[in-house]
Image (tube, rainbow, N blue to C red; front, side, top):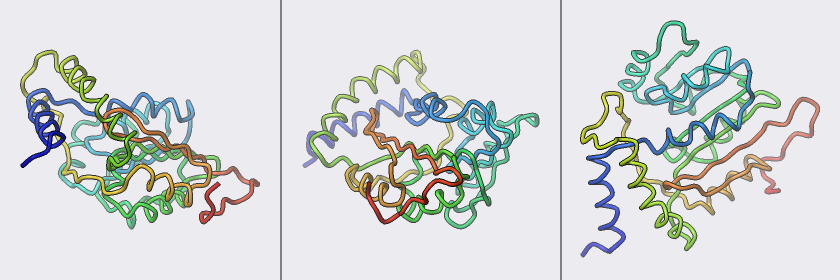
Amino acid sequence: MPTMTTRVLQAIDRFHGVHPWDHNAHYHRWIMRQIPSHFDRALDIGSGSGDLARLLATRATTVQGLDADRAIVARARELTGPAVPVTFTAGDALTETPPGPTDVITCVATLHHLPFSEALTCLRRHLAPGGTLVVVGVARAQSPGDHLLGAAAIPLNIAMAWIKNKGRRAPRPDSMTAPTRPATMSFAEIVHDARRVLPGARLRRRLFWRYTLVWHQPPVGAPAPDPKVDR
């Protein structure tokens, strides 16, 4: 017999089928507040239909979007004008990441599709000295705090969906998304592993079943971080 939590989540899924909105795009403005006002190169891992990559292009000289889904990469290219300095590529984030150094790397709702520590190590390697990594990720609810924040997000989620759709009962034409999978790591596990790879990383639980991570690559001349030490 389905539990109360299962029934609630099923009801939310049905509501989203009628009133869809993008939880990830909700954090795009927050992402932009974490990065410099002007920089040279940006890389968006899991770029999807390209909304964040195009936003990064308002500050970067060049932007590379990388996504494993070829169909959604094709859609991103269709939506991007020729004057926008963004290139979209279909490929694996671990083996086909464009060579660095890159000043800003963003990764939204993608890390839970990849080997977590290996992916962070790869991104760290491609980040320029003084560069910034910004992650919006998905964690598995485990602790009482996780469940409390998830419960608080339910009415806000419904309100946001209603406001953003303004009564529309069909997805917008550009709402194409790639297949997703549930997160397997808890927030506590993510914090532990992330700080071993990225000493000093800032992580926070967020609304709408997300967490955030911000890390700055030490500049030239600074002591090299020890990826095995949790500071």
